Length: 572
Image (cartoon, rainbow, N blue to C red; front, side, top):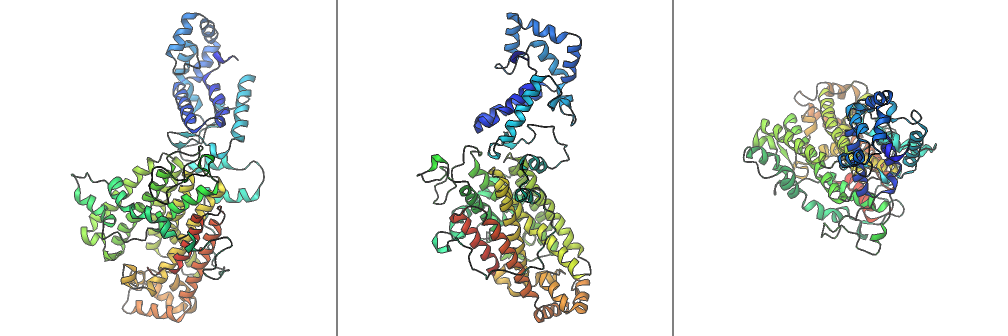
């Protein structure tokens, strides 16, 4: 077939064949062409077949040879560089996309058309297979995962498409092993039988000390100092004349004086974003330069994105960090109402200030605002990944309310899974999303996810220890809050191995009778429950450090190692 008479479907294949040769900006324009082509084709494949059978297609091609027809076709087509005869263009408008959107449509298959169309499709397939993952196509800033095959069902996970396109063509078992963790974590390994293998605070080889430029708090200070103000100003907003109380309640923990949170989640996202940027080396234009984004005047600003990355990457990853903190804060609003907590971060809980109804609505409002700005990141896989966190938070809360079984191992697995849903998922999927935004390969995405997951698990285990060892002045909430809420955490479950009869009765009635809480504390103290909980937290910290060590050495990577150790040392 000649270019002038090739149906629009072939242009799709031809376009994909050249995708790897375009810059990011050119790719966006090219994808706009693809989008318009599909919309033009919305109702046409059957019409083309019908027109061909009736000889209309032949007459249309013939009429296009006249100057008048050619002029009209060129002037009216949305693709002046690709003149399509007017009769065929009109036919395409009628029914093509009805055919193209069918999962089993021959429209998208190679080998079902003429030899020329087959060759174009084969060329597109070969080109797409050889294209680096760094050249992923974007449509309006989001991943377009179906450039070269049939469109997935609306019920299919977005990550499933990425898994197919990202899977290595060879049988590299290591590369294949990381795919399940990236796209679906089965949550089937909790490391209950593992013991720490390294002495606490013994750094892995080639990790610089904190004093040598790897202090996570110093490296992230400029980001965190402005985080709350940015959330309050840009994400929550200040123009709320119609509901000022709602806005004030939503911004409660982002106001000066109440902004006492640790901000571990945004700190992880920002440090990891910088560490991953160093994992693929410096862009040649950055060599010998400050390697900093011009959008920030801080000492530790973000590296300049590579040409294959979205050029607003630093801003996108910072916005992701803000969204992560908003989701976390919303969950605190809801948790405190459910648990009847009096204080949070050393101040009255939101529902004690504004009432239960307003606290719940303020939490919902934060989630809604976070969802809006998440969508504006224009990356559908990141939207799916971060949205999963909200589902997990609800799952975890329901699991916590229901309690677990009677068998120790079942209780521990149930408890750890609940911990992942309530704490680990937010850290894991926020870190994973930072990697997805950067367009990094699966090995880095997996390392980011596993670092967040394991550090999140360690964080919650330490929180459980502090419920026994801490105080309201250090933790910002009442000591023994979990026991008073009827919750059996890791120290209690480990203690139940030593005192099964008595502790089981206390757990079953959720420490509801007079003296139950004090007796549970005594049993925990008489057992090794707290030490075993600390050891399990240490195991998760080691796993998190092992994951982040898969990223290339840099001060930011090393700061994440130190942050992991700080997690198990914290007293609040």
